[in-house]
Length: 236
Image (cartoon, rainbow, N blue to C red):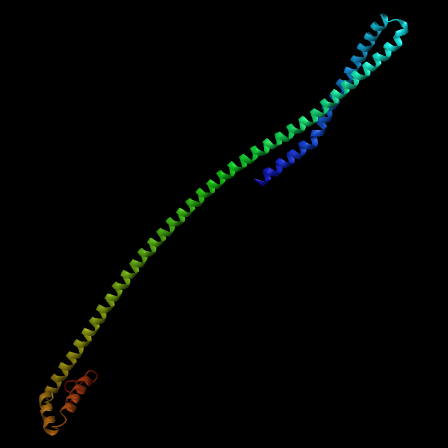
């Protein structure tokens, strides 16, 4: 927009610089026409003077010639003033036309620039709206993908946690079964060796009647130690 305005100003400045040249040419044409008119008037004056002198007595001719010269000078002066006024009017008219044409051209240029600016603004707003819609759509798609991925990961983590708990429960169950079997094996070995847990318990009660709680604790400790110590058959 600024570039167009600068170019228009340069154009108008060039027209203003060139304008005096064109006006000068028109002025020369008017002055040339004035000189030709003066020549014509002079010829007519000479013919008219000759005709008048032919019918004028000799003693009056001097006065008549003087009057004719004055009339000629008055007419030529009036004619010159008319031509000078024509030149002045021409300068004023041409300057006004130049200014008016430049003003009209400026108005049209400004209107064109305003229209182009409105079109450009509308185009930019349209592109901006489309870009924003594209960004919103991409953000929603990304959020959906993240939500789906998170749901998959959470499901996977839950499944893995459930599997871990199941495996842990299974290990505990197997360990418990192992301990039970070890206790049963210990009891069987003790019986085979002539020991009875019930007899041991009864004997301990008779010997230490006040230490029932201690005996119970000893039996528990004995059962617990069996998990790490065993007596193989035929060792005695």
